[in-house]
Image (cartoon, rainbow, N blue to C red; front, side, top):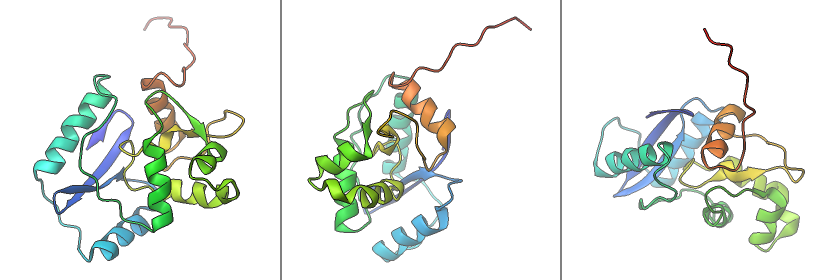
Length: 170
């Protein structure tokens, strides 16, 4: 799916969305392998109701008409990763948190590096809003879709303001 923030690859399994990730991210092969191994399945091109609904809801998000998603999800990862991803889902539209706050949210402030790694392993971008994590100093920090995509998403949500450039005409 081509979006204003970049190209996403979508996947479903057993009536649930299991993949909504940046097509050209550095860990594309590893993420795909984790999902196919975890589900004992293979990636096959196609379309179905879940993927169609995901595209519809993402289009609503990018048009500014949707702030939450109601798609059944299948998270493929370790129990710790799933705990982090569930905590990410609690960060509201237009809000941001740091890795430290996310670590506190799961009850383990010392796990900040593991929390950051789990955040980076998220295969359900936008739906599980890992883009809402920023550095403790308020700076943009790494994002699988790239920092420009992260800025676009946070700007769309009103959590980040892009500087206005003067327009001198054509």
